[in-house]
Image (cartoon, rainbow, N blue to C red):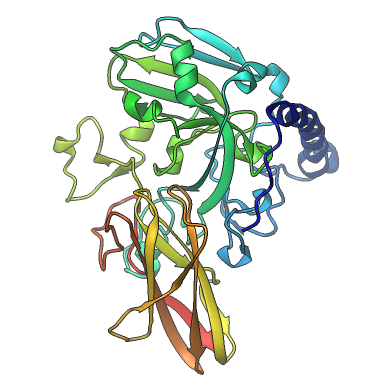
Length: 391
């Protein structure tokens, strides 16, 4: 993969400032063109063009077959919203850091955050409910929630500052336990994390995505990125950070983003309804429509694999009722927080087929043959029997 040489700090900030102004203008014109009452068109929940995506009520699912490189283009990156994308102005942005775990509560502007030490990281983000529809489509038991296929995941280059830098400015107390991030979207979506995770240098507050100003649908002006953890922890449109000396329990770690079922008795996880989801699961998926339709003959099948636990070291595949797995080729680069691309040749013969892939990471974590059902359909990661029609 070719890489762009990073600009100097001064060049980047100047470019970012200019692009922010252009972005605001574009958002304003797009709201008028696509969502304004004058146009007589119902507003959409998103700013970006939903055309290339599989559409859900407030979400956009990436079609993996449209992706080629390591980085998911901003215009093809999935969107998980709990409310319509807010149209915000960086000039009005303020981030408050407060709570009894902060000895020196502060309020930061957009420019204040740009001045902090910067960090760039290539990392994938995935919704905890990615693959949810396959509890029904493959396993025969429907789960509650948005019926994602394989496309609630993407990999990007994120630039921002470590959340730790902001917490230290606020005088993080030794007694601090939880850090709760609040968005400014409708309902103020929020999700707390333990202070140790908040202080991980790779837990970021980001303002750029793939070298461009963070797009509105992805959290402009500022969002969190928490590699390896459920996407709900990477709160968008940040406006407030509450640092607490006690464990924080909110909707999104008690009734949502928890594993509910006989395997996770509520009495063992009270006040949550089940086990709270933090770390995701190792997965792999083919970059094909579901179901796929291919011509006969030799085909080069591609896909993506990723793990929250580290680098992917092996991807395997098998077709139909084969008992043995074959190795796929993993393409460089192989990075600790990113997904990898893989490919393998397959001779397609006429008829109906299934192709499975499975990934293993550097710690030996691999995709299991089965997972216990949970009511909200989180963390499914069996090797999916991808249907392929060949004619």
